[in-house]
Image (cartoon, rainbow, N blue to C red; front, top):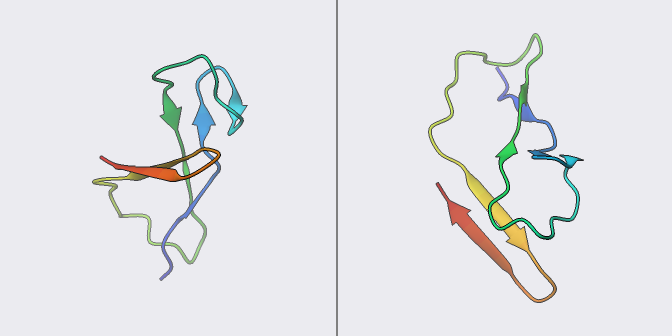
Length: 62
């Protein structure tokens, strides 16, 4: 069976992922997409968010 796929993240007050400015700590959410070939009994226990800028990317593991 396959792993679920991830929809694009939703950023508070912006809808689908867009450029974030003027918000020091935006809330970010996402949903998993399942189909007939997907294992639906998985549980998310951690995540990483990559924040990119003009020069380099920072990765935050939670």
